[in-house]
Image (cartoon, rainbow, N blue to C red; front, top):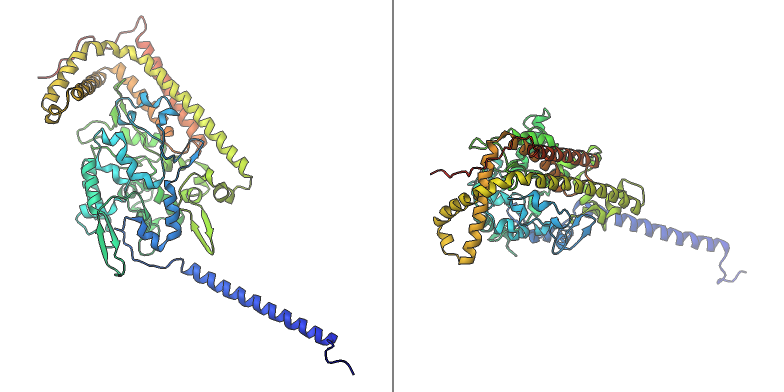
Length: 549
């Protein structure tokens, strides 16, 4: 009779089956629970601990509901650097890399201060501190891209910024008013509008807290459903004009754009070329398209209310009516292979990252070179070093060609200088007299110390002399023709220099544009030299220009 403690083969087999069944049952149960938990997490990616509105411009309150994205957004204050840019804590002047910029912007505020860019969290504070704003008068339109300004537009347009949804007509009316204001007056209205912050422990109750905030959550997302939305009136009008030029009438970006397109358009609200000067309301020059010559055509055919042709300023050395490019990333990207392949701004600069069961768009907006695996290698199968080397070759080629274009600019200006020297000599006293008369009527000037008065007088004299010269150029066909070449050449050089990819967004387009810039600069230089030849009719009047009484 077998011992009761003896495990028979049948009993052993049964125990193994039972153990395996128990293990499989446990694993299946764990898997089902995990799947259910992950599906629940994905279906409910956040808990609304507080309500936020479009007028909640302070991003920290959005961060209570969307902590992953907010933590990433805060990282835009960190220093970073790539081959040709980044977000240094104390960014240097661009002239350190592109030495021709000071003469390129002679007579314009960008000759005072033109620093490298930093992250989104610095958007407003950097504008508040630049010498272009602290030392030169600027319009309120500058806030269009540097602040969470839409609630201010609503309030200034006669609407209630705490009432959702916003009406585009009200936003537009407020935008027109703010754009016409002086910068610091508009800034005061921004601070006054402040942020509608939720009150702890009191659901659906808000308290308005004064203060200005840089671009943040409300500028890209609908507060109710987090859908991507565009609210900046400059872009809304600009993209409508662009689509009309392509045969698409009455385009409404928030109604007609796909979600993929919106992953570019929310960025293109600001990363574009636009006019934000004091003469007219800020506008995007896309009536004829977004290529450099198409925008140039729009500007050339645009008349200010006083009847004069569009220009940003008169160049202090040549008197030419110049164009200043802002930061045309969208326009340049539109000409590149990534745009044609359907790759959006967010795909590269805000790639999807996984956090637990969640796939979120990385709100630490920065160069793809700092996250090649997440950005580039999602499509390109080459190793990281190969991909970085490709970018380096493109950017180095663009940079070298840009330096050549910059040298052609300085060569042209050096050749042109003798044409103006006699005029300056003859009209210096006239310019000083005019400057003295104007300052004598300025009560603020009278209160300055003598050293400050002397400095102001020199600046005013230079400005008067430049104005006299610009008027002389306007009446002298030979000089005006050179000025037109200068305008065309510098517009192209600036278009590439101001664009924040060092040519990478569209390498062939950047090369084409810089080639045209060099050609136009050399044509202008040859014309300036021809006018000074031994048989040339010297076009510059040697008689002083007497002021009108």
